[in-house]
View (cartoon, rainbow, N blue to C red):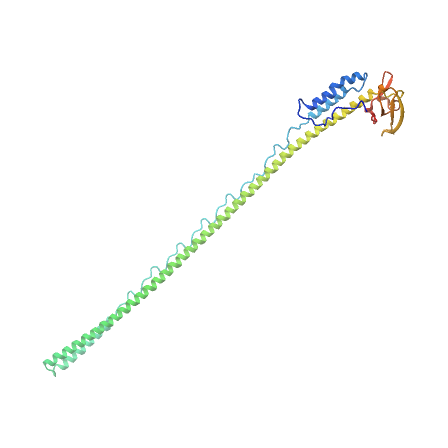
Length: 359
């Protein structure tokens, strides 16, 4: 078992929300609590952990100068502020007038031409005069031949005949008057029929014209309402899409800022982990004597990428370490990585591409 193994949890190990900042506590436990002890255990150590702490603090300062708080998309605005282009539309049919509204019935003032018919009385008067003359001539011719009583009877007979003739003439006049009245009534009926037909045609034309106007107005208004609704809908859609794009930019900006912060934190933790590993490597290297004179059972097991020989070995003195270790021989490596403590070589493995470890 490697007695120098680092038992401190990894800086990437998730901690709960306990007292204080975990990063600060971890730094204090890792470096603050052990720095002095390692310095005491390793007098003359040229690679003290305090040196690494200064480098880490400098790196933290450089990371701190990066602005990760400002969201570059926080000021995004909705540029799609589109108005309703159909909002001012007017109904072009609203002012239409009924062209048939002024129509008049041409038959409304028709006169009955039969109302002025008259009876032909000239013929009746001629017949009456002719009958009177005939009766007068008869009386004149019979005055000499007939007696007094005979003349009186004849006169009576002629008077009766004249009366009958007058009745016939009156009947003829009555027939004419009846015929005139019938003709006037028939013409009046025809006039009324024509007036009714004319008024019906006028009313139908007016109603048809008004219906056409109302239909055109309704269709025009429906077209306007549809256009306005479509315009408003398109505006809402455009504004909604614009708002979504603006929100997308804002969220993306926030996500990018968060990712940048995470990357920085990961960089910090990786840097600290590397520094910590290097510090532990230095501790291991400086706490174990690397002089060939202190080792036994030395066996070459590989070469590093830079060509350094890698050996397995055991320490002669159990106080320097128990078990089998992997490392280099101090007399075969660049001497800038070698220091002397108490007359024996110690190796700074952080300067080599070879890992010192117990195997």
